[in-house]
Length: 115
Image (cartoon, rainbow, N blue to C red; front, side, top):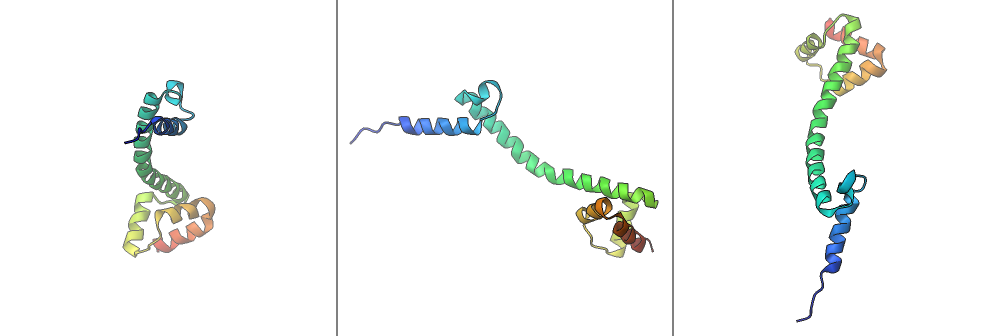
């Protein structure tokens, strides 16, 4: 059986890890062991925060809707309750967009749900 030298494989693996850790601070960008550990933590945080992002956006939409409703004399919770009762199916993202960029159309939606 012929001899297999594994230097190229190890080198490729090492280069891949260090390339992914580029820009990290201190030894994490130059030392393989520290870089590997940093990548594990970074991957865990990235996965966690991709899930968290959805909730963050929903909270932001709620704030924008509430800010648009306050001058009209309504609160967010009362408005969302009336939307449910009237079976209006506009999602929070669209309501937030209307409240921020088209306040006159948002006001029309609010007055229609009030009556």
